Length: 254
Length: 258
Image (tube, rainbow over all chains, first blue to last red; front, side, top):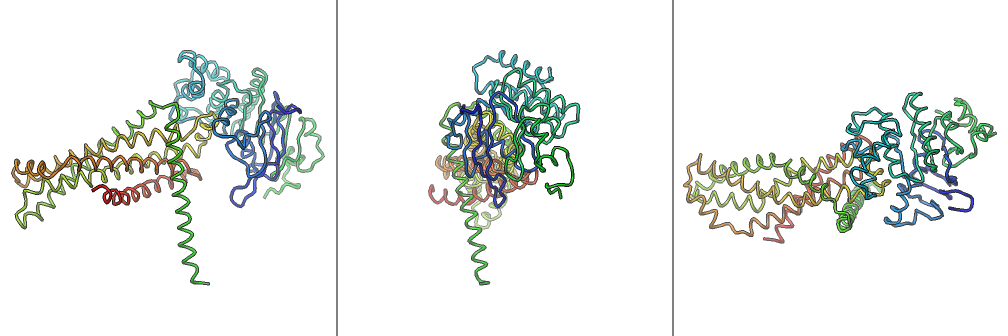
């Protein structure tokens, strides 16, 4: 960990896809043991930024430091060691659709631990109970609703009890009560397991609820970062327009 | 400058082709590399063998039977012009074991299993399941590509043997059963003219075609982008590229081996 208490640090990250520059010099620190919510417009590169943190996308330029080591320049083997410390919940959960819920959640356990089959099953049931879905072990992902899939995805992400959990839009497309339930789950997970969480969202109320830290991405840069109160009181017009959801202002909507 | 346009077009096409050939080769090298690293995923290989092998049994038998039958019918009409009906059996057997068995079987399996590989891996790519493997520190080339290649390389020769055999039976049914060629002559000419090497070379080809169809199917699927439409495109291209490569490499392999 670096001296300032950040477990992940993005330093001067640039990334283009074809002629489109998505990230234009990102500098962002993720404090250890806290939940950081990244807000910003749809399609504004939040997912791309999140995927940099776990080496799914490599930057054109810049450093991604995890615990003081640059993962951009790591080989496969070293990178896999780092990835074992992470869990990630994907936008559409990314469950393996050829496997049952049990096999999905058990996947990381079977790959990376020497637990017996009985212990694996116990652990899977425990994680499913944690996300409020006991007894769905034998269902296929296609039999589940979107919200249930996300919760199974979360159970899979926390199966190995990771130090860092990345959430890619955990509440997008869910109804309000379910969004609130997922937000509580994120907060609970953070409290119970003491993990570092990075949450991508454009649900601003949820961000205030789960985040100790909020950062706003706009036009390829982090334009504001601080506690929920600091963000709420920000003098930046872009931030104000975004958090109050106003159609007029510096953000061009159409 | 107008005349530069066609050059530009051809050059651009050629560069894209080179690019793709390079990527395909890279995926092959990665697969070899990951094949040598533990863990060996035995159950995944078995699952793919079942899919590629057992699953393709039906089309293989049908392809073999009808090819053998129609080939006997056609060559009988030709050969009877100069009284060489006795050679129908050996002609069909040689053509089947050396060429038609491996090539037609591989083309059918490309259409059935190669396309399915592209569709499955493509769907996994666009729904971030491939990314999920990376995140869980499991290499998707090892987990998804290697078992499919091993299974195809192992099963294609088996399917080809079946197609060869069924094809000869089909030729026998048509030649001896329908056209009245003498049973003893039909069999003895096959034994007289066919060497073991005709079969074994055909099987080497089949294994090679198995490599091509699985590698191309996985390649197209693995690098899919653009949602459902992208998956459809990947599937079509896997079948087209796989088939073309099988036919082209068949010529090269034949020139080298026989």
